[in-house]
Amino acid sequence: MSPIDVVLLLALGWPLMMALLSLARVYSHATQPHVYLTWGWVSAPWPALLLAFLGEAQWVMESWLLGALWELDAISRAWLAFTALLWSLAALHARGYFAGEQLKAQAGDSAAQRRMIRLAILWPLTLTGNVLLIVAEDIASFYLGFALMTFAAYGLVIHTGTREALHGGRAYLILAVLGEGLILGGLLWGAGDAQTLTLPGLREGIASAEQGVWMAALLWLGFGVKAGVMGLHVWLPLAHPVAPAPASAVLSGAMIKAGLLGWLNVFPLGLSGAGDDIATLGRVMLVMGLAAAFGAALYGIWQRHPKAVLAYSSISQMGMLTSLVAMGLVAPDTWPFLWPAVVLFAAHHALAKGALFMGTSVSEHPPRMPLPLLFGLLALPGLSLAGALGAGMVSKWSMKNALYAQGHTGLITLLTLAAVGTSLLVSVTLWRQWQQRGEPGSHACQLGGWLAALIATLLAPLWLPLPADSVTPPPLAEWWGLVWPYLTGIGIVVVGWGLLRRGSGPSVSLPAGDAWWLYACWVGWMQRYIQVLAGRLAGTKKRIVASSLQVERHVMRTIERLLAYEGWLRHHTSGLMMALALVLALLMLI
Image (cartoon, rainbow, N blue to C red):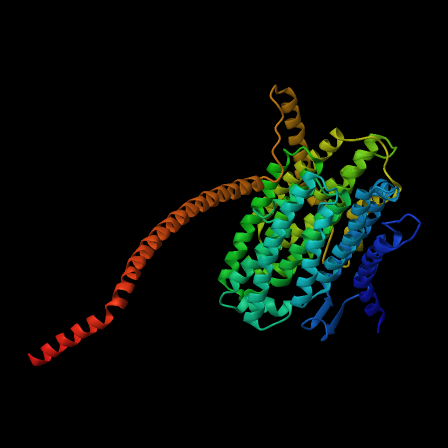
């Protein structure tokens, strides 16, 4: 067994071991107080992080499920690197974030004990599913990892157990079940049609199948639940404000990217022979992605909770990524130039959004440092996310450069305008954090995880294992084109803030979840309609039963009258038979 094989086993086995150890502590009879979030628990993602930097590899295991094919290639290595790093930093942050709750649990608070046990078990299980779906190239392993990650994460969303948390968890679970059904339908249909068990075979099958566009559409919408496709995005702004900050960091940074990775794994990206129907689906995705990019920005700026604003920022950024993936279907020749930019964009967004969500907990209990310095540091991931600094600038230039090479200037203009929306959202997030800052008291691990995520965000192109020369820094002449959207966004926020302060009316606030409440109204209307219909059917049933009983009573009376003649017939049977015989004899004579 080679060293990379050992690291692979640890990457999947170590988080499972941490979950089992946490479960074992529940039934242990130790007299010492339990330490729920141990350093071993924090280290669960470290083998996966090491695996990403050991090079490309492939594993074939005939005895696993239907036959496993696991692989680390250019895309999956980079994906595993930023995913495992984010999980590592979020776990470190969580050790400080939950320090107070852990003390309550150790002091005998039964509710805190249940919450900490659930977190200690489900966090590494969610991580295991996330790692498995990244390395898997066979359909069974990929879906197992995706489903494990999806359903284990429900416990992270509802951690606090409040009414709002349960509502956000309900929205998450409803959309998750819908997405899993669509994914399973698309995978089974495509695998059955192509007679394949692997994701590469599925891609080729979708490209050549007569109904391939409908298979791809099912998978687009199924994975789109995670990726925040417009209309299926509603769980994000409901779940993020109620989830703990470390959970929000991995939900928005790592898990939301699982939907994007699903698209990269199953779509025939870059295949020119995929057909016009696939290209049409790509155009639909392009329109929906741009609608999400602009719509989420316009709606998100009116949110009061900073994590709700960040949730809409995730929807907007994923809309941009959706439009880039769509270009791989609309213009396949673009994809070889575009995919490194997509991976860098995804990595940078994951770490920046993780740092921003961790930053919300830091601002709630700020460290003892000057507030201008603190909020300057809090602003750095947002600056980078808007493309005005560090890795964000490199990411946006890589994307624009790839589109420039193929002449897609119209899409560049739209994405540049969408970056103004990103600037608006990160500016509003900082404003809300300033308004809602609390008393000092950040834990050292909490600060360490946040600061490390901030540094990793800004320096992402330097450490991310992408192919050589696939990412280049922008030339100095292009800097203004990358920076002006951020400055424009800040200007709009400042002007808007001034107008709202001068206005006499109440400040505008829109409910988080937007279309969720419309869906809830529709479901309520359908429920009332079904209740009315059920009432009418019950009334019809009563009338039918009453009519049936009336008919039954009439039939029974008739039968009783007929039975009354039985005795008379029995008494006169001999005479009647003689009369009948006489009548028959007379007829014969005639």
